[in-house]
View (cartoon, rainbow, N blue to C red):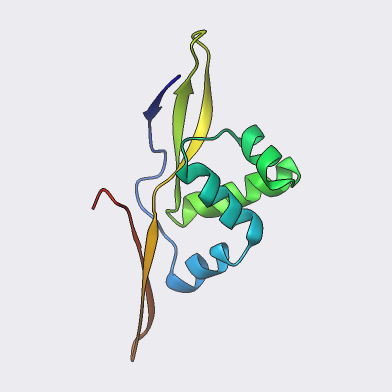
Length: 110
């Protein structure tokens, strides 16, 4: 099985509070952990989280908007392909200062 990343969102529009709120949800955290192991389809994430597909899709959309996930195309050995999601971060830097809270997602690629 080969994967080819094709990000559908070029830049995160989330503020620090929204990013922290997204990660406050157990289902979203499970999705981030699962996709850090490699790209996963929505069906695989639904099975992994024991949540409804509607809940998983809502969390995926929140994670995409926050810059924690990216969409990619996963090609199977039989030539078929499907949309999958992969984690874009493996750590967060949180800075608290006089101007408020700043969240900076980081990847090992940086």
